Length: 182
Image 1 (cartoon, rainbow, N blue to C red):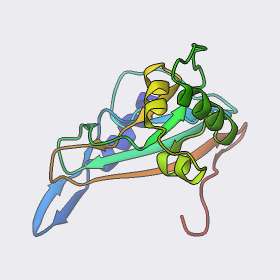
Image 2: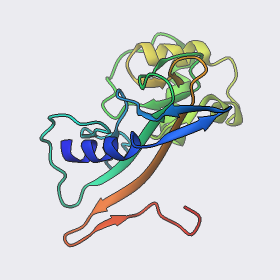
Image 3: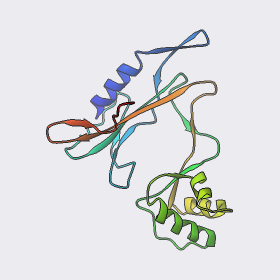
């Protein structure tokens, strides 16, 4: 996969963007990458780098990948920032005894409505949940639910993400996210 990362980096970093009369070099966000997708598991175990590296992992027939590019006018490195609003139940969630009653109720609702697919707190509100933050935080601390906080580069920088999903068939690599408008 290192060849893919090198090609993405070469193309992305060949661009500049003009903002407010200043020219900025586009940089790949080095600590983000694409990934394979498994059934009901958006982030599979294989990573698709967006910068040159030495990873010798191979894509295999029948696999599905999110080929993602992340660019920035900042340093090209993001960190967690601000309040988390997006979550997903882990595919490998441990079976632990939950002592917070709201966590038990919430876990049942998450499992029923989302399975292991991502959700945001607004979706929980729409399902009629209220006063669930203690339970949700307990699920995160127990390793059952993964929190996805917003990612930020340096203050004042701009970031962008673009993605297509591909399926590796025996004779073709099919872009399955392509439509008339994308």
